[in-house]
Length: 189
Image (cartoon, rainbow, N blue to C red; front, side, top):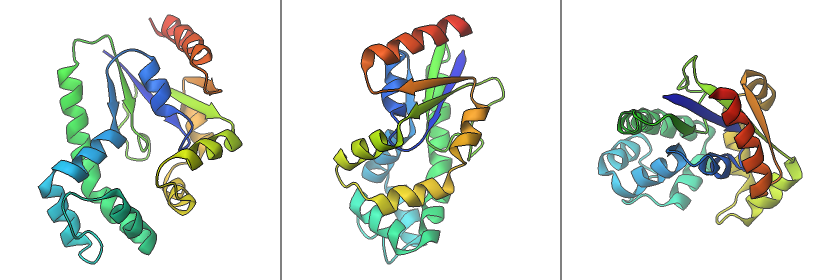
């Protein structure tokens, strides 16, 4: 099985590109959302760690946002609780898809949390910064302070780009993305 890790800035189109490969995708952001909505054990751990902030189950995204903005250490506390669970979910996904030729790991902190393996193929999604901001502003509950808080815990984009085997220039058109994916798939098969 070939594991492809998708790297890039927040809002660069990582999930869009990941889905465009047409093979199984592990999307960490979706899994985090499920944990907030369905996992009472996670709620209990977060409530214990952040009792003034995380107060009701299911956990609402706005509650998490306020928690992160209240204190810069709160994000680290949340990550410490959430990431081991995400790693477990990823391992279940990999076992479930072990017969697949290719799987995509759409995990924002892939390198930061040392989730990638040496043999993984890393693809950096490069997008125009002003286009990213325009797209982010369209998202429900967009908050630039939150985006910047997350950017601070991420490795520099230049570093991620250097570590990558391939770069996809994302102009947010399906045809252009598909063409680049086709080229990458030819190179790795």
